[in-house]
Image 1 (spheres, rainbow, N blue to C red):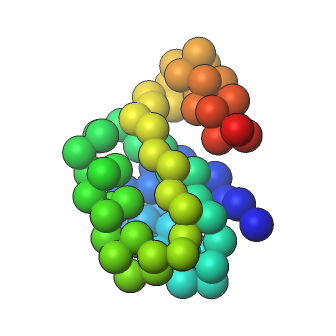
Image 2 (cartoon, rainbow, N blue to C red):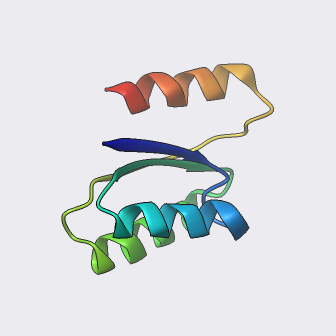
Length: 75
């Protein structure tokens, strides 16, 4: 199963991402900061190597960026 999480690099978003990876779900993660996303991706893949993680920097206040992330996540 796949999980899409926005605001994935901080707080509850990060906690949910890590918990879902622990449960074996593949992840599509977005947040505004690409560096923090890549760091989280590395952390998750180190702990759970079988989990696929797709990341994309997205400003969720911009509809076009959200739509692009959703489209990419579906692929």
